[in-house]
Image (cartoon, rainbow, N blue to C red; front, side, top):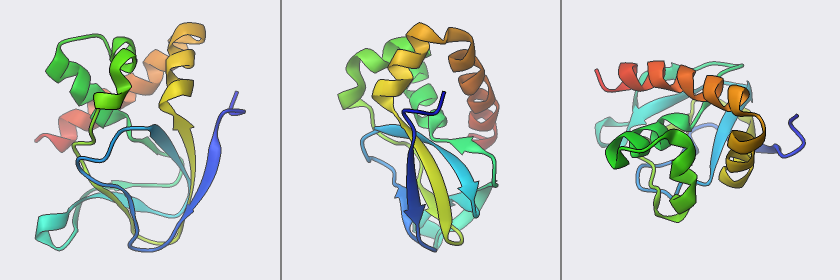
Length: 130
């Protein structure tokens, strides 16, 4: 099922994505450690991302909340979506990424898997907004 996934290597301290970047993918952390960081506070980590975690959905989810639409409908206008969080590699990382195009396909063909991907993100979003 991961035939659409791409592997990316990210070096220590590199940003995986930053606030206001366009949203073009979600990620799965295969090896390493990453974290949601606050760039204006010397990149203090406020939520850790561990091996085996997926991330990147919370930005999509919060966009759908802002737009007051269902998550799967947000992909109709994906070019206007912007990241609301910043994630940085805390050590050298190996990631797999799934493009928003693949996510849109997934929402149509594998709806249950798509929903479970975002139900975990909902819990994380609540933690991030505390």
